[in-house]
Length: 281
Image 1 (cartoon, one colour):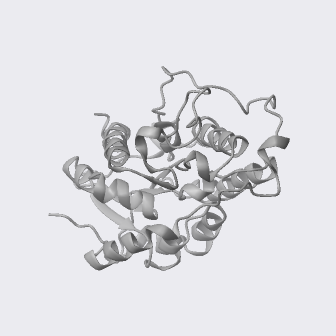
Image 2 (cartoon, rainbow, N blue to C red):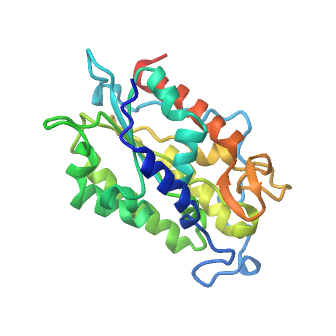
């Protein structure tokens, strides 16, 4: 029986608020694409198509799945996450795989309403108990906490902003290290459609995703990063969708919400990945 904590009314509200997760078509921080040096080291590298993007826990002794019951899983997200969970079927897939599934989004207090990178330090410090116990019985906590920002966070138009993002997540990591009993699953940010960003901004979004996967969780026994960006972003440097939402995953040229095919692809991939991380299957 489903134990999704997101009521039907909240689902409707979330769908109505899809447009709240919007982006700008101009570069931030006053930096234009024409002024960007495309030879900046590390900023225009094409990923290997055969690169394995399923990371393992660095120290599997740091976190263990609970015995005798389904792991309690919560996903903190906004509109793109609702697409994965419900349109893509991820909630049902996870339950079928043996997880107790909870969803937290718009209208669910500070934690549900605030998912930008700069919000996470506040969530993980001032609202941490609420984050790990929300809507559970007294004395219970989530075994797995997954969280992501929405696609506007992929518009990283300066090196300063990229470093700020890293700092926000390092603050989060300081807290997660104190709770080895919980598995934390950060997701990289979903990419924007080409018309909603500029090339140099989108390249930094990939750089941030690579940092999250390859640097951020090193030596963390209770953290595994899911590379959402890699699944959804184009990887052909000669294509218009390079480092942006793949053309086949776009609804239209102005909407960065992934379409149904993308939602299903992410749902299937994430379920398989988490099942492997938790159960080794």
